[in-house]
Image 1 (spheres, rainbow, N blue to C red):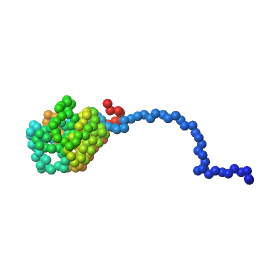
Image 2 (image 1 turned 180 degrees about the horizontal axis):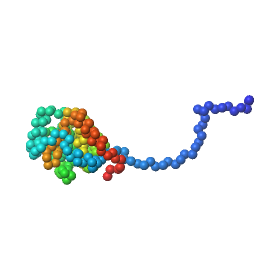
Image 3 (image 1 turned 180 degrees about the vertical axis):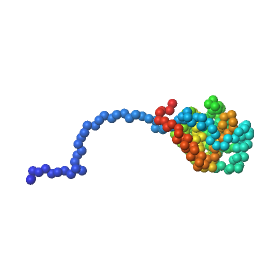
Image 4 (image 1 turned 90 degrees about the vertical axis):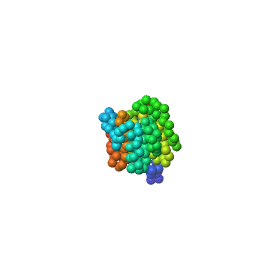
Length: 208
């Protein structure tokens, strides 16, 4: 009885040492996934997302001014260098301008515009990156006029602008060889655009 060993409670026992296996390298993926436009959506996105206003630069801007006067949108966002430039020339002041210093993928002289700040992001052609999406969201929260300068291509950021803009805003972009498109931001329009984005391919490969 006197030689019986005292039992140690389980919680006080020292853990047994075991052999630690060598660490294996985890495959690295890009920390910022992005959406890629599939071929199946290219034709669909050529159709206007909103009201198509046909005509020359002067005609489309006159009709846009009339529409703004009538609808009184909460905010106006322009996507594209040509439409942004024409709006400024015709005294239509977008709160946020999303440009890439290109027209039909050809470099141009940056449009002359007075802004309070410029935010920059990368967005390769045919993609919608997390970086660019976040910058558009950030710009829309600012009270000052903001230029979003994209390295790559700004076309698909129309989708991000519609999803991030407050309801009753206008998102204006150009429709090549036809005129301009005015998207009025509503719950229904946000849902339509959300479904388009969900159809896009979510990628984790490293962007070039």
